[in-house]
Image (cartoon, rainbow, N blue to C red):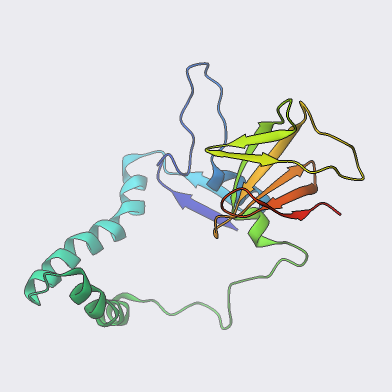
Length: 183
């Protein structure tokens, strides 16, 4: 229902030179999932947000030293036991039975939990995204998209998709090769 955080730039955008405020990728995803976001505005509130992280960071360093752990492999092997002991000591039983997770019917989380950036199609009917040129194929909707505003989605597996409004007009692999044309 709501997410409470500090004012880190991943949660809240910084002001641009023009004074315009945008929205972060995290903020966009929370909005699309209908989750309210709140940032801590006072020092005590920021302290509550950070306390658990600071405790873990401080405790982990001391525990690693006490156990003589000096390599990443040893730390990774030891971490599950530390987490189990930490949770056994500090975990609080939930107020109610069952899961707090509520599935949202008809929502494709892959389309929400991806990077989305707006681009303008060039005169060559391609979209430039970082180092890639994504060639937009002809569709039954229209023969070209020159100068159209489109949205590029980048997924966790490195693949991309180009959307014009709600419609996907092409899917691409991580190297920018077309894998699926719009229907």
